[in-house]
Length: 72
Image 1 (cartoon, one colour):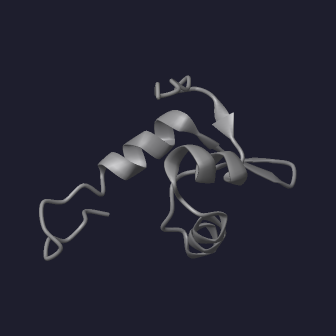
Image 2 (cartoon, one colour):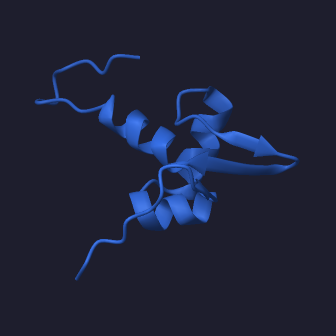
C-alpha cells in the first residue's frame, strides 16, 4: 500500500487528523482545552490543524526511551 502524501499547508479536521496521524478526536479536544496539543487554527467555530504543525508537534515529542522527558 502506498502512503498518501498530504500538502504541508493543508488544513485538516479532527476526523482527518485521526485518520491520517492516529491522534484521536477525543485527545485533540482535551488537549485543545489544556493547551498542550498540536497548534490549531480556529475558523469561526471550526477547528483545523495544519499538516506542517502536526508533523512538527509530533517530531518534538520523539524520545529514545520512556524515561526521557519531552521538551515543551
